[in-house]
Length: 175
Ligand SMILES: Cc1cc2nc3c(=O)[nH]c(=O)nc-3n(C[C@H](O)[C@H](O)[C@H](O)COP(=O)(O)OP(=O)(O)OC[C@H]3O[C@@H](n4cnc5c(N)ncnc54)[C@H](O)[C@@H]3O)c2cc1C
Image (cartoon, rainbow, N blue to C red; front, side, top):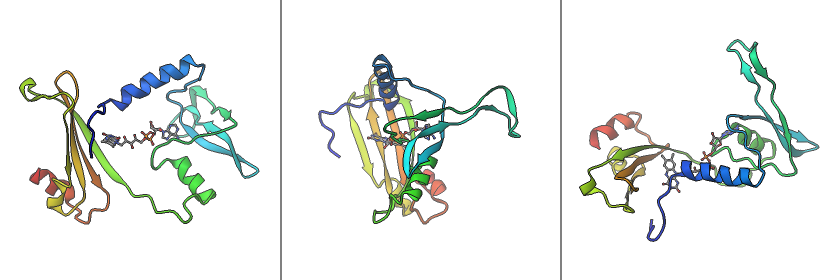
């Protein structure tokens, strides 16, 4: 929990910047295209297939219909986040979780606040370990990151192991 000398950054801005660097190196970025299938041949991952575009609710093809593209590569890296649907399939098919600790999950929310400049301290990081969730018998914690321009990231992470089904209500009333 020690963050002295580190930077507070926006992951969204970092990713936009990284995309520019990658494109400058000749990488093709396809924003808005979801990988919908993996290509597995001879027991090896060979690439992915993107989803069809322009499909109506009833499954019929609309005017701008574009079939998914096959993208093949020497290496395919899956970076869908902690619970991607392709990842889940690969974990299952290749038994990647055998003998491993099971994944566990939390849910996080974040807001960007403009606060009173007199209370703003750029670089200030505050974590609350447990609070205010411990009052409802749940685990998790919160954070306050003071960015530049009088703004603060305010967030709360709650582990999804809570036993109190009314946690959201009791948390908000105690916060
Ligand atoms: C509210 C909140 C606050 C947090 N604060 C911090 C913090 O202060 N510091 C810190 O270090 N960490 C923080 N984290 C955790 C951090 O954000 C994550 O650990 C990190 O973003 C995980 O990165 P990732 O690349 O594995 O997945 P993600 O960031 O989840 O990226 C996965 C990407 O893949 C895309 N995707 C999914 N499926 C497909 C598909 N089939 N085809 C194409 N694209 C797909 C998704 O749209 C997404 O853009 C926070 C998380 C939350 C929720």
